[in-house]
Image 1 (tube, rainbow, N blue to C red):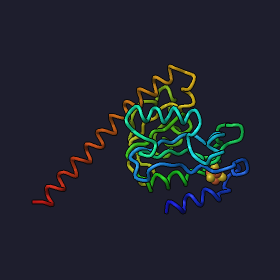
Image 2 (image 1 turned 180 degrees about the vertical axis):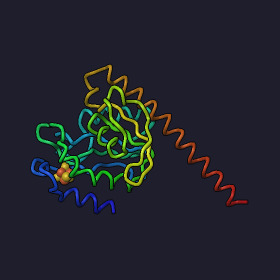
Image 3 (image 1 turned 180 degrees about the horizontal axis):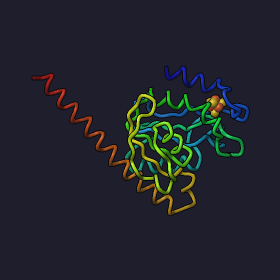
Image 4 (image 1 turned 30 degrees about the vertical axis):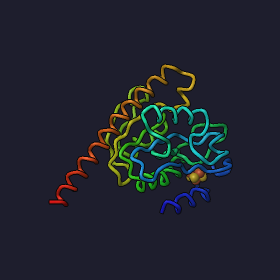
Length: 206
Ligand code: SF4
């Protein structure tokens, strides 16, 4: 099923962005990830390598993950659109609509417990999918919501895009604080899973 989506993305010509890409960027990480990070679109480095978040913003994302004890391979990282828009412009609405079924399918397969939206376009798109109202990044970031995306009940944590924080220490400290909140939610989910397991284990043994 996963291979089918990746193959479809690699061959996709559903929107004009296929004309500009060197490589589509389906995403990477663990298919069992409890946390999924969703950015906006691949940039130049990502387009070169066919991998998400490998440029300067990607390095910051990796650092932020490590600061809360996670590695890139523990999570899944992708973007709303899988091909690079020319000159790094924002993806257009019709491009997002054309590409969105891939993202929803990825969410259905991975079944993350937490989605971290990186930046305005990702947050707005995921909010729309979950029937939530997006106000602005300054109002919505750091506030945890719950919604059903595709077939998956998930917590959503919006934060700024790491690229926006590269040269802006104020935004960087806000992202850092959002990652601390993420670590707490992740810990509570992990502890919840362990408690369930222990109870089931007990019932099986008795
Ligand atoms: S951005 Fe998405 S819909 Fe558009 S060509 Fe690439 S994979 Fe297809």
